[in-house]
Length: 188
Image (cartoon, helix red, strand yellow):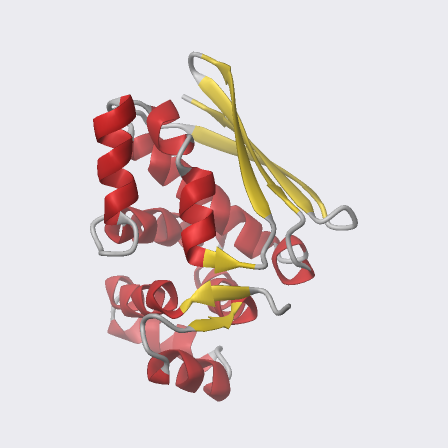
């Protein structure tokens, strides 16, 4: 099976380029292959697209702006996505069931992953202390584990989850591309 991502999430990521300003957004778009842009823009929001499309977008942003700015863009993008139809129900249920804590939102990361990605491995969550957790992406495709930009972008998404839970946190990343895993240590 081909690793895929929901087109709706890719649409929102392309739309989020506008937050970088028109000149920067144009420079990023130039770095993305025309067929990737076309596929993404023409796909219905319910379609599945190759995960490589999102990897290419993330890498283009990192090349253009650097890792710190890419992570900020990814973090802000996930915060916006929790207000959109695809992820809003998960954010609402996390608040209703678990309250507003970083653990409440990190605990929902596996569910969000399964909604956004198909055949891209599994995300696992474990609480390690009252102020920390470990999230692991296991069995991920090479496109993800071989792209540090993408792995770091996912770390920024976990930082967004902690922010939704009312805390500023940090995420440390350990990748084993051969084992196709990425492990995230989250603390706040």
